[in-house]
Length: 55
Image (tube, rainbow, N blue to C red; front, side, top):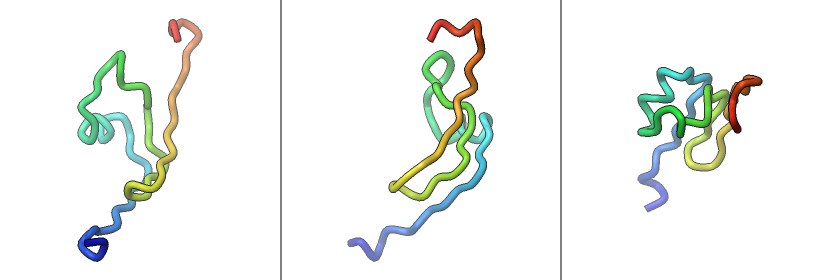
């Protein structure tokens, strides 16, 4: 079974690409950009925080 799993690597997905990948929308979309993703193993994302956010 493990041979059938294809490795997927994405780099630098912006908010529009992220919204195509995830069903979440504001205020539950708590990430602004994916910097690096390696299949189901790991991901690095960025969340921009402003001073007027309640979180």
